[in-house]
Amino acid sequence: MRPYNFSAGPAMLPEEVLKQASAEMLDWQATGLSVMEMSHRSPPFESILKQTRDDLRELLKVPDTHHILFMQGGATAMNAIIPMNLLGRKGIDPAIDFVHTGVWSGKSLDEAGKYGNVNIAASSSGMHFRNVPVQKDWRLTANAAYVHICSNETINGNQFHFTPDTGSVPLVSDMSSEMLSRRVDFSKYGVVFACAQKNMGQAGLTVVIVRDDLIGHALPCCPSVFNWKNVADNQSMFNTPPTYAIYICGLVLKWLKRQGGVDRMEQASIEKSSLLYNFIDGSDFYRNDVAADSRSRMNVPFFLADESLNEAFTNEAAKKGILQIKGHRAVGGMRASLYNAMPVEGVRALIAFMQAFQQNHR
Ligand code: PMP
Image (cartoon, rainbow, N blue to C red; front, side):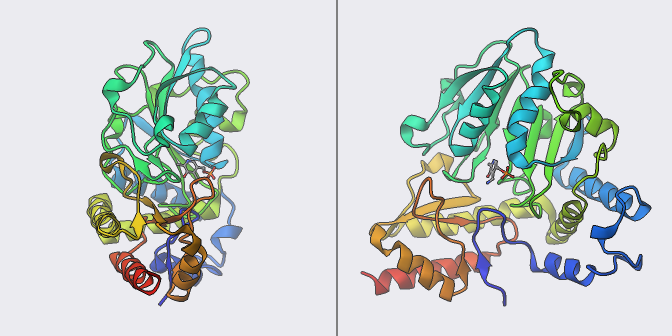
């Protein structure tokens, strides 16, 4: 049995996917070629790309009003790509509204500030990012170019459990660490983006879901390869796309369909995260500080009451096949990431280990 990998990303992949990729590595479907070796313009690769896009649309129920783009540069590149593509729609110096809920929305707003006037409409920085501000407390700018949120803060462990209403101003969401883990009504969003290395496959691929009318307004400074119009007009092949990462994403999507799709993943993430939060809340040895209404189902940061035991915790965990459980350096402590590929048995094994560790180190 493989160990349980709690990394926040690059993260655990379904074993079936890794096995299939390995079986197909040297010869994909009797073509005599590895997917890595195929021209991106060849019919086999074009079929892989089309199937991956179609499966994403079907699984996520993306409406016809939105394009699905495959891009590169990770979610970080999107912090520049988004303002460069959206600011051209609105006269001179439009505001960009941000809801600052953690490290990733913070990086996004720093970068966007190079292109436009950032307004922090709401922030939980004063609360150490332990909550998502309720919308009635936001101060949105009328006529802003867009409103940016990070729906799941991978490091701080908070998550939006509501869909903001931004009226006619496009809502942009970084869903890197929650994509495909719950049902989303994409008609409510102007742009959704996610890097693939958490819930969709491997690093190198960024999925962008963008409403059609937001395409075609890029600033003149926008590099051609990052201009959504070029990417959309060329079916994500304006230049060589990350072919192998798209193929792996395609395998993950087929696996997800066999599991029962996004609704099943949502139920499973509620089950997995509730098990872990309930255990932590019932213990005086461990704690999670995020407000109950803002806790992430994907990334569960937690702390040992006695932090001098941190190293012993990670070392002993590794011996039990519980890997990459150390928290992000910005927050410290531990973090358990519960993406789609993590089975409930992995969470039960983690809890059993945490119980035993607690008994042995009191
Ligand atoms: N946004 C979120 C929510 C993330 O979790 C991450 C990666 N951990 C990023 C952005 C940055 O992604 P990348 O490293 O692919 O640029």
